[in-house]
Image (cartoon, rainbow, N blue to C red; front, top):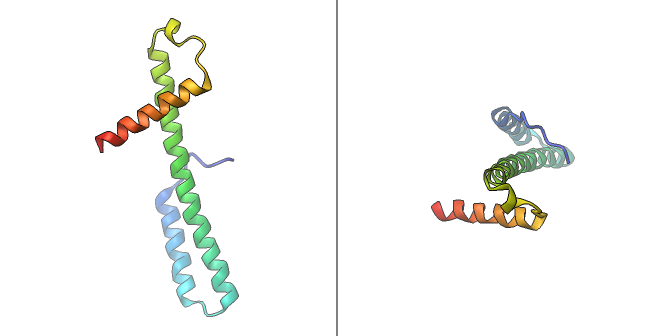
Length: 97
């Protein structure tokens, strides 16, 4: 799935607020439902974009870690190894919070 890396959070929040204001003024049930779906979709898009951005950042950290390690030690690294490294990094970050 594609997501916009230049995603502008403040403008998306403004769009959501504008839709919410329009929803508050709307009386038709069908139009309200459509606006609620639009608002929900934009909120979900914000969340998804944030998750993708975090994943991109984490993958870059994993890649940097692998590149720093000795080539002999990292040769033959598998997807499972990368996953273990990534999970270890996440757990390390969580422990510091």
